[in-house]
Image 1 (cartoon, rainbow, N blue to C red):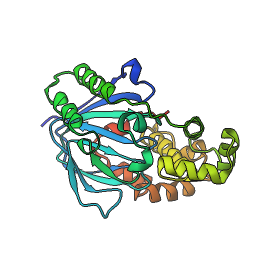
Image 2: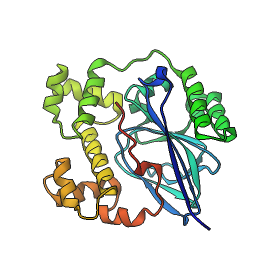
Image 3: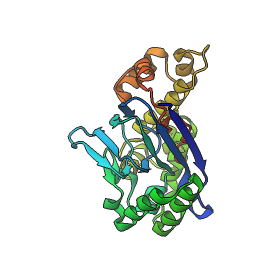
Image 4: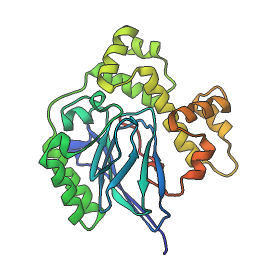
Length: 279
């Protein structure tokens, strides 16, 4: 059977742009069954399947049992999830900004740290409606329009504090290289106060968030390495001390070395694209 690898990018309605960076549609057919690593990234995971469910064999918190999801919402993470697939996958990934979790779901991103939920467990029947509308839509534009229509109804006035938004933006803009002292100084808080507020909002310390953002940047660069480039060059570009530092950090966050990860990933999941970090 011939393989199909298709993707599409959508821009959210203007009223959603403070909360949603964009949509990525993906359709992969005819690939070999296997296991995909859902890696830590600089944005929450919000995916609505079309057709086959999303089968999480091992969650980021391994004490959680395996589960299938029609529409999955997951918080930030510092360990991989293992997702089993038949070789056929289709759906829409919704890329949230730092404000998106509060505005759309009424809770801070920290409330979802290291866990996954079916969307209807968070927003009730509206979650089922979004999934159903995507099943009946026949084009990517129709699917993105359905996302717009449903998500616009979810928006509430529940803003992220300006200081925390600024701290997150600085971490992302620096590629994870900004120091905690610099963050605290920029937002006008003590390091201790920043750590408390940041942890409550995002579920992790500023230092760990920066580490994940740097890893995410390195992962994208490794995925798209030109033939003549090296992992050592990626390490230098991303602010690691050397290749060994990158490899050790990658192994801790991904559960394998960069080279093993590259060898394992036969299926070009949407995560391999430029799912730009939450603003």
